[in-house]
Image (tube, rainbow, N blue to C red; front, side, top):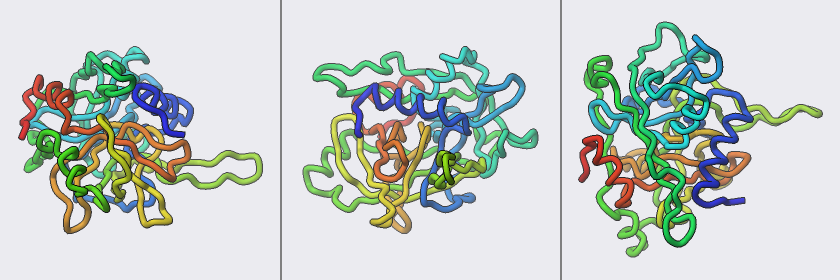
Length: 284
């Protein structure tokens, strides 16, 4: 079942609560990323047990001190009464579960999009499901040489769609968290392994609408993708030799068993650009 707008975001939050595992960056049928995407990091908080830091969502460095993620991630933490300044970001390739004391962390402040959940004219047209963490210091102070990812040009995917340029287009999802479900035995439910490492997978374009791109992650057609709570993680335009530094969108939801669809919130829309401009993110 495919749900629109705010319902999609809420589904992501509900899945995180039900699974009670490390939250975002869940990559299905992918490979360990290593150092291939050093600007992709994990959003970390003491969201479950005081004094114990755990991953909650994924995201990407988009300016020297700005980390892009999803609003339903930050809103989810705020609903747990996590103070806005009690979050951290790590770009380590392996943060551990729970986060190891030796993991590099940069403290930051959450900024949920004030219009998150607003559908706008015409129903669920735009859930405004992006947020940022403003870091206390530039990421390069802890990770020398790290470079922010790029945003797409305005209305890029509308333009490509008109020219039929999205057919067969590949996207690379990157993040931390659980992997594809492993079938349970007897009465036991499926499990979703989590190792706290950064992974990546390749998906293919499926459909476009005003706020999202829908990507196929059907393993039968050679695609991988994302899973429960893989929220805020980037989906780079292209894959392999054709991959770019441009983030097409951030993961906001998918199907219930992580085997069919990855839904990403577009970053080429006017509303996404207007929000990011408030934090000094470079806009092409």
